[in-house]
Image 1 (cartoon, rainbow, N blue to C red):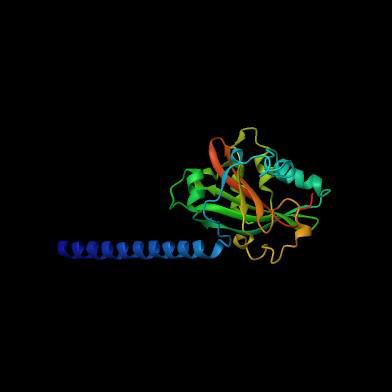
Image 2 (image 1 turned 45 degrees about the vertical axis):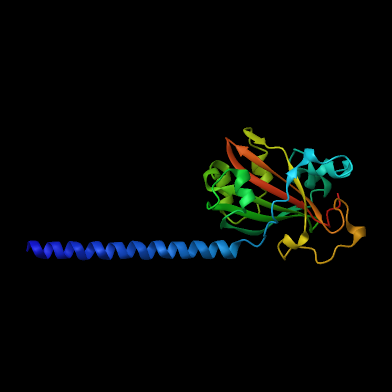
Length: 227
């Protein structure tokens, strides 16, 4: 009887171990699939730099007043479009950020985060492409709402929080080829460009801190941007 119990215990131990491995393996496969299929925007190599490095000629006032404004971009777009503002979520999922993004957030390179890519529409036209990266450790309080795939404005959540503070901006000139296909301009006519230079697009990014929990927001001004 004792030998039978030993054999049965060994059998169940082996079966339980195999079950755990199968479940874990399935989770790993699903996680890898999620990483490959949800992220449509591929950030350029680290081309971002502190805005203080640019002189007046490189970053004129017409550009500075939008790129370096510390207030809510959503509020400015609402005003500039006469309340014809809308957020359209393009992609959202738990994936690994680019290495330079992880470094800015001070998270480990292998860590996943909630990445949300949106088009900010004014009068039905995409004026800004926004990419928000929220580490899992930062998804607390009102930021839990972003777990759902909804077209809520991130700015509406952030700038209503009295504990919000923001890092200085980094800026860059972005190649449109690195934008999602659904929003990347196929051709850019020079007469339609207001904030941008040649075929590149001005972008900015900064870290927000809510109760010392970071999230990174990058915003790229598109050719149709006409405030």
